[in-house]
Length: 185
Image (tube, rainbow, N blue to C red; front, side):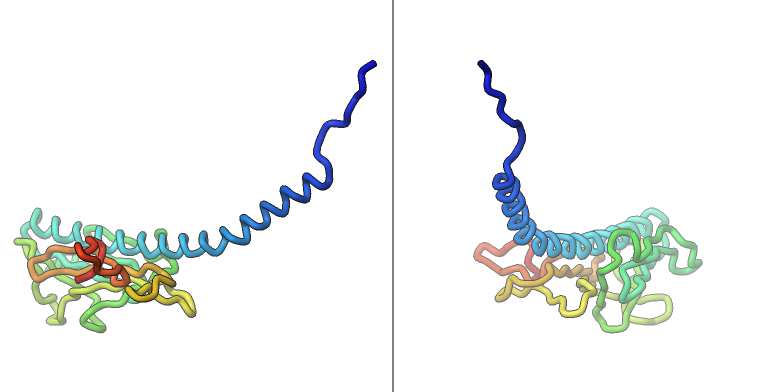
């Protein structure tokens, strides 16, 4: 005679699986939040760097001065011809990086102009061109990582040289020997 056994899970097995899942969620959710914050900062940095590269390339291709105007503190930007103001390309703040903010050096500067040879020059309105962009996460209490404290958001910095070359780096990256290529000078 065959004995039939009930198929399925016992209540003890079900509770054990739910406890393990709850523990994994408890440990994983904060890390996932940090991951999302870092991704939004990275998307904003990549977008601004892309806009700078487009402006420099278009200045050389069109043989005219081209400017990038960043909507500080938002991350949106517009590339346009400096003399005519004809728009070339733009990006809105909402495209992937709503919670990222930008600071510039010199303070208050929002525009950078590239010459037909690819270098940086004074803006058409006489203002100083931006030579550094700092991208952070816009959240109360959000702090950037530092070389001595790896806690916080991985903030980014974009440096623009007088020759027009651009470089994105992490101000919070530790400088090792040999130095990390991600660290800011």
